[in-house]
Image 1: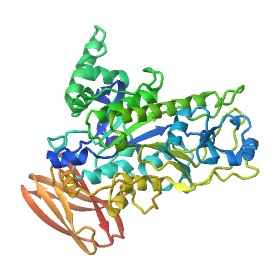
Image 2: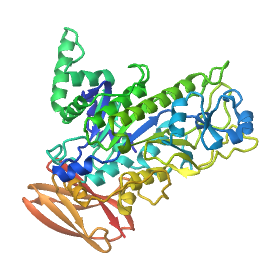
Image 3: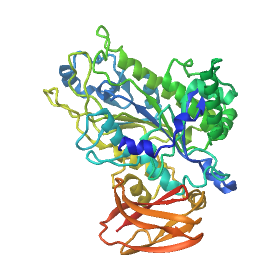
Length: 529
């Protein structure tokens, strides 16, 4: 995604002081509560928690192929974990975990963890920025998308956003990011639907009605004023604060505040879910994985920077899962770790590892099919510094599985989100139940200005436009964000208008129809057969 386009389409959430326990929270679009029928649906809604490991995680040091240990020893002796220290997993002698990950070892052995081996994509990119962009947008390596995979999902579920939001039927954020920056993963076809809770101390300030003191200076007075204005413009601060007030974390496994940054973030997530927030997706982040040097303690390879990171990851997820269980929400929650790439098979001379390709992805939750999906990495007998782990699973297979078996999308909506067909994996115990009434409520909330029929299109389709009076601009785009043609650009009187347009030279595939009208933007996905 081109960064200037992402920034241009992003709500300036960095100004919104929505904080929980000092963490910055980014919220995306509201969720559905409409009467008892909708409440019955949302009470069982599935929640996805995305754990981003920024910097490129060394998968060979995290999930250790014991059946390839001899080759691994020849390739990376200066960072290698002693095989006697590797944590064993029930049911396999081929794979183990880093000794710092005893918390995740327990979750695996308790049947709540799936390790998907060798996850990547064809023709991998080794730039942090571009590789992250690929993972967040769900694009091919040679393709630049202006939307994120979660943004497309949310736009499909709530196609009228942001017109008319928040409202009585949809008061909650659709998605929340704990962190000061909004994520391109949530960029929709028209807008990024994110707001941010940036830091845990400020979150607790918000729910306790307190603020950090400001200096008695002109700059301090200005800061106080900015905070006040920002508070007034935070659309979802009230519902987030109300949710936080309804629940208290129960697990005794949480580390002390500020001892584990990831745990501080996940502690907020469980509190908000238990407090009744109907948010569908949360994203948290643990950085520091770009370990080109000093990845391990030279005197003890089980210790060092990477070991500390893996300990924090493992500890935080176990505490989160325990808290969710005690709060009675564990069956609704599934989490996934991901990083922009793995590391090379061969370590470097600085006691670290360099940018690589495929790496394991961990899924956790009560509804995850516990086990190892795939085989140990394919390591050459005499690896060189240029050798990488081959891809066995495309990361978009995991995304597809989440859409199909967790968010319960039908095949057409899965393809509209993923843009292509990817073979799903057997990693989730699907509990999808059809609820057409609640689905209709969700998809028809907000101000509906645009619809297309027939859709899919063969030779011709029609635009149904609800004009408020004034100029209506409707344009057709490819999924990559390239404008194809202008379908409407004229002043329309208030009321309903039907406008036909022909297929012309459009090739089969997915397109975005975008309508701009009186400062409102709405988009629809068009399928051309």
